Length: 122
Image (cartoon, rainbow, N blue to C red; front, side, top):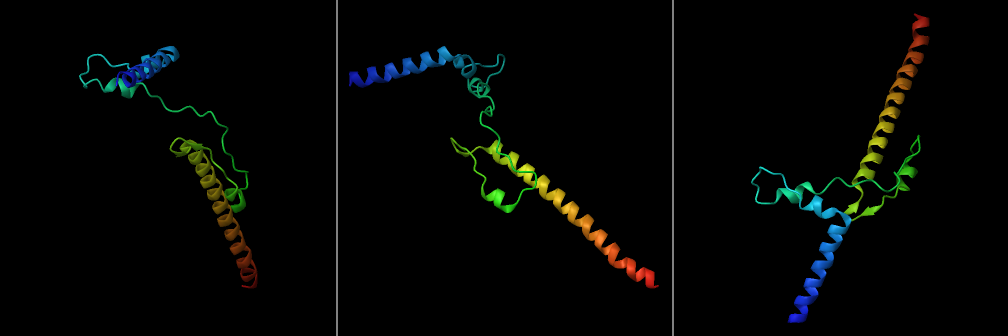
């Protein structure tokens, strides 16, 4: 029984040493003075947004369905990296919007060309 306690105590000491050695302990256990929040606020303040350390996933300028099929996202701790997926989906949305706008312009120009011979006859 004593040996389990010693192993647990040794692991706790190693974890504390790592926190202090990396400087993370000051971020994790930092609290705001003058607020009575039961001591939980200090833990919330210590965690920042994750820093993107992987290269971005990019689509070519004229994305085709086969390009979407070839997309691969890095798997994070809880699944895909949301920042990469959001970036690609935003870019895909912008490209599809531009294509829809261009198709509308071409359809309007075609309608004008089709109407031009009829106007010449009248």
